[in-house]
Length: 142
Image 1: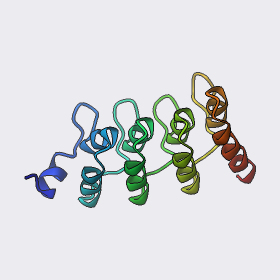
Image 2: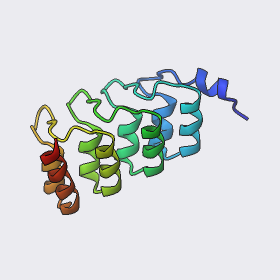
Image 3: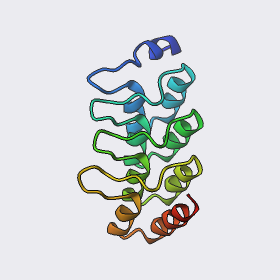
Image 4: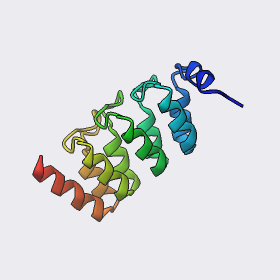
């Protein structure tokens, strides 16, 4: 059985990814929670600037997303390409995650560096009208 101390010790960057990122990616929510309770850096970034929150959002791991948000994951961290968790959520079609990110203060106006796309543009491009409405409302309120 792995102890919290062992998890914490192994939670350092390995090839650019942390154990927290890998657990979030795979939806191992209990492992995510255990790592967070051992005080790993919730906002650590890999070589491409991605965080555990971004991995969880990309792979539709809602429980892991919520655990990360509950432990203070920064919703406005930008990957090297300028992408944020909100942009990834807008592209995935998960309106619940979009709402959760907006409730934590996600910036609606950020743009991806090369394409200039915003979360709203990505939602529209992918045909996610409910998400587009949520983002338009949030944009008007910011």
